[in-house]
Image (cartoon, rainbow over all chains, first blue to last red; front, side):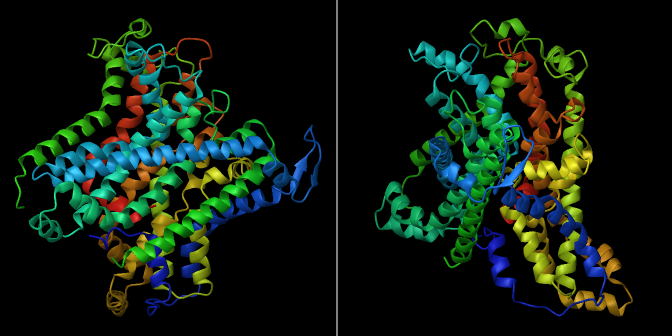
Length: 310
Length: 282
């Protein structure tokens, strides 16, 4: 099982040098075959990315009439802007919340599903479907339940004497987008945790049980350490998810508000560039994000190399 | 196991049942809300048991009689989503099969350079290059079109890697034998390699279909005409009614319609879905 649970990184790194004898000989056919993929990559990925880098060195005047090369000024403005650091901090809080909530719930459920004698497959079926729900749709579902005037949960909280209005309260808005984003991600984490748990040999548990270790102790001393490669992998995946794939939740549910309470980095790029039309500033933010994704990808792939050893 | 597992088992089932309920609860509420007339949902207490307006509400959002803030029917948005999801899934698979085939079964100059170039797309999601990608698509005249919704998203490092990995497990002798029997490279691809990879292709299709259906930012950027709204992105317009009342009895049926196709695919093709998820692993 652990050999299955392993990503692109491993075979990219390990097979890169294993040359095989070419099956067919043609000078033009292979080019023709890779051409569609290459064209789309160049036109819609590499070229826009290069443009973002170039635009981050340019600045438009207030009327958008002329553009001049300003070097690193956009970056200077960005890194001296307290608002940007606030956005960064909001993103960190948001990501930490989504990751902790989603992974915590998934791990609990996966441990339970690994333990039951019968029915694990049924639970699996009943728990994996939210993966297919779009983040924005997840956001709308939870928005409805927490809506201050019509929501079931808001009503319930109100009965308990707690006033819920995420349209006014920034912390509550943050909690709402965290819950909605984490809910969708439970499936993914559950599947990988369960696969990781099932890869741990039963005999280890039995030996520890015979030696008198209870279920909790067995979890702490055996299961959790052996699960750490899966946990670390999921940590990276969840941070990437929270950073980049939850735009729909934020945009559909809070629009970054109230105030800037749920304004994350990606929402900020969109809002500054596409709505606010600050092209240079938005481009500089894009470049910062590219470096971030690059770093996360490298972490993910380097790690995938190592995890095969266990 | 040496100990009495009765209580452990009971607790496990209890926690799992709770988890299943927690995960399913939002859907139940959405379903209930879809069965009531508009005024029942604005009075403050939301019912927990379905009413009798289910068909009326679904009929209204699917038909043209919707008075929501989006000028097109949900049926059209669902159709647009379907076109986008199928276009992206099939497009990704088609060009990735070709690219992986070239990289594994041929030798050509800059082969590895091509490979790494495709690899770069992993590091460049739409979210980090919003404006320039929009500009490229605008310059190509692809705003408000199905081409614009699909084509820019069909480059796929994930699919190319997965297929490359699979193709490398195909014994070279097979290609050798095909060649001796007089089959050219295209014939080998169509008659031998593709049938061999059909499980992998199906698993990829499931994952990519969900990916395509659930796109949000991209349709938001490049559609200004409501005729090209997808349902996942269009629903946000139904919420943005300013100070007016949101028509929850229309929003909730739309939400259910938006999540049903991808969820259905996952539940019906669970085995392929899990295989695809674990092997692509993003």
